[in-house]
Length: 438
Image 1 (tube, rainbow, N blue to C red):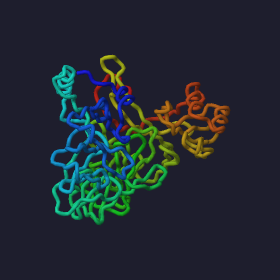
Image 2 (image 1 turned 45 degrees about the vertical axis):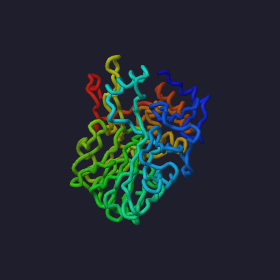
Image 3 (image 1 turned 90 degrees about the vertical axis):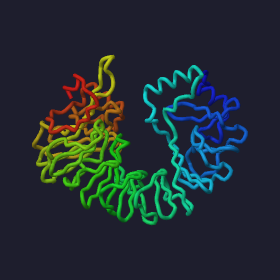
Image 4 (image 1 turned 30 degrees about the vertical axis):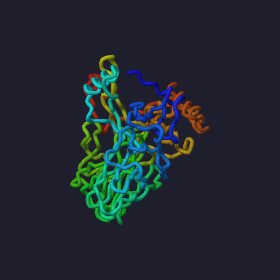
């Protein structure tokens, strides 16, 4: 089957109200991110339309005179003529209430082999285009009390029960439920879209976590670990990551750092050791002994610490396959190092570079150091550099930009420091001989 190209549809088709839907040559297509455009064969182009919402984002919900749709899929037993928007991506026809997600998810029920076969059949005109990604659709239980949106995102209630993206939040109290505070790296607070609490319970999405709710708990994310939503209760020291709770027997935990840039893991300190979430094994693991057993340590700058007159810093690393038959990610690590040079002089902060966004200059006796905050995504591979000469110090003080910093690293004006590894948190995705060097 010859499928029109996305470019042809977007240039020659008529987009319907700035939505995901396009009318192209008298047929309706839905854009499914990561899966291209899908034809909605049964859609009636003449009556196909969106319904009024107050949402600022594009909704994948639409109706025609016969059916309602979530993405490219029709919604069974849902009347398009009485459909209304409730808010937070919930819709009702007065009898049924559904949640139609504004994002796509991977179709985990479709195996690689099925995808291959369905793609082959589709190319021959003998089947439908394989649905590799889809817009989640959830039908809420029938209720004698009408549903309504709750808070600003994700939630709905019928007055007695609460739902997150259409899924029940067990025992949640609608009159008490609220978003957990999300603390940014600069300590500013906003509302989490992933963690919620009432007076008794705390939830990650619709999962009730086995730790008590507290008015002091807050959520945080670190660096580019966008899928890891951490919950911390400073009163008990309990920690959760998504729906996983760190062993409460090892609490209280301390968050080693809220800063990203040069870390692949969030590290939690306990008197029993250092713990982290292993993305490869999808479980919580121990990295080693707590390097600061009495808890009297200080993070003087992002990922730079002092303890008992010694300096430590966190550093990320990764290994990828280099051979043609063995490419892809092998492992990711986050290690703590102890500085082995100039161990006697005290630290003195000299300046922030571009308000601290690029890094900081510090002095230790006669030596100057650059604390990098750009990270590997900006091709700056080390947290802590020694500045080789005063010319480089002056250039950094003159508000050097990332290109200047990369050039200084390449030319040896910023030098890797001498340090020894204390512990390593590691996620091993597969074995590779190169990984022995990590």
